[in-house]
Length: 412
Image (cartoon, rainbow, N blue to C red; front, side, top):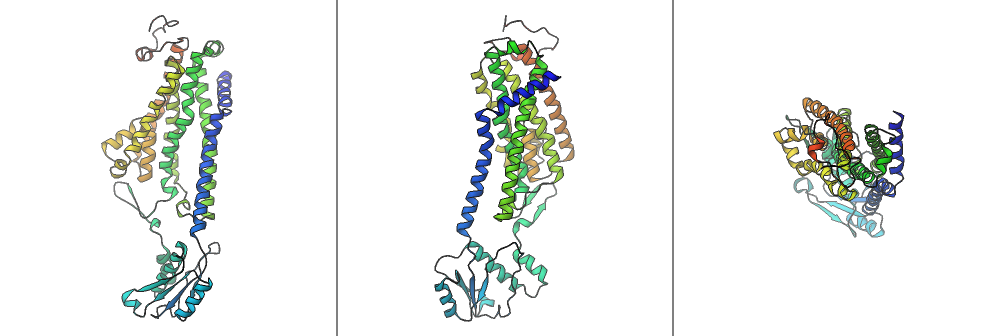
């Protein structure tokens, strides 16, 4: 067993010190930092806390009710002016960024005039209309009136009888996390697990395999390589998760980006994602290792790597169908088929609740498929480790395990 861990440790150290891995590891933090920086810059340019004024000829705001704010929220002051002349003077002096004039017949016509030199900021416009709604609802209980006045459409999520969700307004980060998990799974496969098919093929081509197998069994060797790659992937996941969580905290609590203010995910969905993505990754990593052991050259291994990404892209292509018909035969088939199961379940968990029997069946099939893929990788490794310049045919690979392996590539 010690050799198994030595192989895993060697593969981990060798891969994490590669320039390509370091670049891939840093690419996500750099993109997240750029995203947060662009959002901050855009909000800085579009946000202005200079007061907004109003002139009320209708009497609605004779005894105005202000919208309360927490101590952490910076708001736009709403200032009353007795006449339009005084409001204009304040505008020309820069004391207000704009002012509103409510017509005498505002209660019947809703006529409001906006006067400005430069267009008022979006947050200023929103603050004024929140203020107007509060005063429209002045006869309501204060707590209810404020809730109605400041409520966002994204506060409401309804569930249909079939378990699908209907998002009201803009969805939040927490609601879309399972979908991001599906895309992250594909990204990890392309960044990390692809190393396996290349590494095994290179060692077979440059005859390193001949020296390695003299000291460790093929099963321990291929198992150690898979574990080492999983360690590399875990490192990426931890670093990316910390960076994204930090960015979500800064964006939601410092920059007040509505999309990032709800980053929570329910426990059942989190457990489901871990239960399908972990064995799914092991399955794909082992299949890639098996492919690397069967091809003749490292260049050929690079050409077939994309075929392992393709099944995960299918659910993304059919995302509209998964949203509209989550319990259709095709959706259930993609959920249970191991190659498409990880991405499909993550997407379905975004837009609804996957039935429990499908979750259990999909997880069981993925675990069995992962174990079978590891066994297949070991068999492919044993058959192909000494076949320099020759392929292992599918017929040989799936032949009875008791059949003797061909020696030294004597026949194809």
